[in-house]
Amino acid sequence: MLVSEFPPFRPHRLLKSAHLQTVLGATFKGNCPADNATRRIVDLHDGDRLVVHDDQPEVWALGDRIAILIHGLCGSHRSPGVSRVAAKLNQQGVRTIRVDMRGAGASSGVSRSHLHGGNYWDANAVVDAVHQLSPNSKMSLVGFSLGGNIVLKTIGIWGAKPHAQIDAAFVISPPIDLIHCSWHLRQHGNRLYESYFVKQLQNQLRHRRKRVRNLVESNMTRFPTRLVHWDDQFTAPCWGYRSAIEYYRDASSAPNLMDVHVPTVLVTAMDDPVVPFGMYADHQMSNAIKIVATEHGGHLGFFGRRGEDPDRHWLDWRICEWTQSLESSKSESTSSGMTEFCE
Image (cartoon, rainbow, N blue to C red; front, side, top):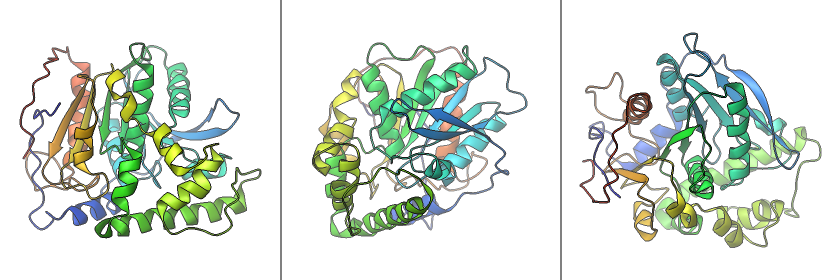
């Protein structure tokens, strides 16, 4: 259901373009303190491993809230949005765990396998590992783009029996239908983004082939230039799928959205050039999921005018306010009515 419970997003006067918002969101980190996080290894169900980055504020005490942040395709714990949000939550006394999914960031030299767009097994392993660090802490999940799809897939599979300490989720522009999103990226106006993703994946694989022993491989001999071909020739066979379409169907969170019981906020922009807004209307969702749709913002952009927020990163402050609200007494309505979107 669409809701309008956040302050409206008003884009910077010179940055109304969805493409400018998207490029800025992918490149501008803003003012973040030095990264002094503790690196931790998480063992996975199939014998592989990944790395998480544990930022623990001095004021944090055992049992206080922990937020787990998951990046998107070609991202890492250093992605601008992930870094900024973690720093702001730390300033509020929230401990954050920034995950490097398989093959990304610090996991690139640790994992033998590669990113899977619906990898709820690894998300489960991270949640269990963080739970062991502080068994009485409530935890919230925050997913950016493909990381948002992973979060939704995870809590959807949990269904009516979610992890006891996970009390909320926040996802930004999640590609819930990977077949639809793949088609969308192949359209003429969006091929620049497809080209960017493929080049990043190519560079990542070249680098990992030199560093990682026993790297999981496919029979791909030449690097394709289209993302669907990359997933067909590399991602799918590496994970045991017969084709990219089979992989997309299995990894998409859309079939699991009616089973979500964890209270979830989904923020997206109607002008997102990477993950089409119209896709969300094609799939039924649980009333536990509340959609906040802004007219502008691009893909993970949301760079706004100066206003009541301390800086122009509108989305960061919504995540911080949402996290603060989790600590207060809840009086949430489960109304299924539809209200107007944020302008």
